[in-house]
Image (cartoon, rainbow, N blue to C red; front, side, top):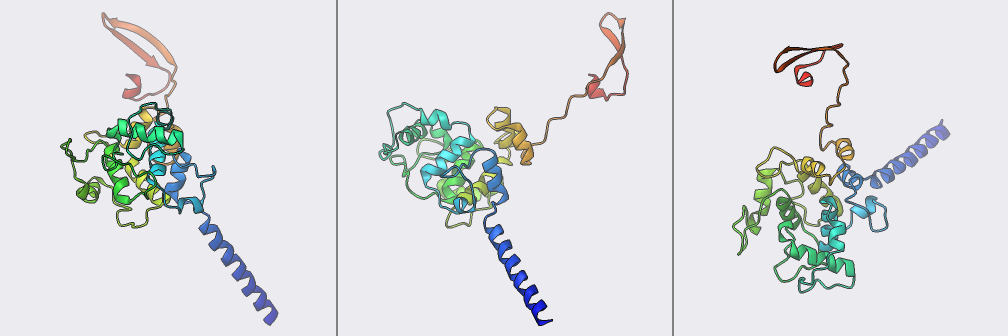
Length: 252
C-alpha cells in the first residue's frame, strides 16, 4: 500500500512539472495571432515564450509595426537621405527604415523630433500613441492640431477601446501583441470598419488568416442557383424563375 501511494505521488509530481513547463512554453493567444499574421517572426525565426517575454527596442517595435502595415520591405529599401540625428546606425537597412519613418511622420514614429532613439526600450505609452495614429487619430504637436497630447495618450486610448497594457511598466513583445490585437478590433476614426477589416480590404493582411484569428467575419459564400426560365414581361422588365428558392438579396 505504501509503495503504491509513493508511486502515485511521484507520478503526480512528474505530470505537475510537465504541465508547468508546457504552460511556460505556450504563447499567449494574441502573440499567436500576431505570429500567424506575420508581424512577429522572432530573432532566430522562432516565436516562442522566451521571445515574447523580451523587451523590444523602439527599432524592433517599429519593424513589427511596419510588417503589420505591409510597409516593411518598402521601408528597408528606402533611399531618402534625410534622417534622425541618431538614425545612421550600423545596420544599413535599419538606417533606411528609420529614415523612412522620418519621411512619413503620419505613421506616428516621430521620436523627439531630432532623435529616434532606436535602441531605447519601447513603452506602453509610446506604442499606444502609434496605434492611435494607425487608427487615424493625431497627436497634437507644435505643427499639428491633433486629437490628443502626449500626456493624454492613455486616457484618449482608453476612450476608443485601448487599455489592456496601459498599466504595464516593463513592456514586452507579448504586451505589444496584446495591444496590437486590441487595436485591430477597434474602428478606424470616422468609419464603421475595424483596423483589421481595413487592412484586409487593402490587401495588406491575409483575409483567411484574419478570419481564423477572429478579427474579421468571413465573407458570405456565393450561392450558385440554376435559372429555370427567363421571359420579358415589359420593355425594361425580365421575369426570372430559379429552380431553387433564393432570398431577395441573392435574386437581385
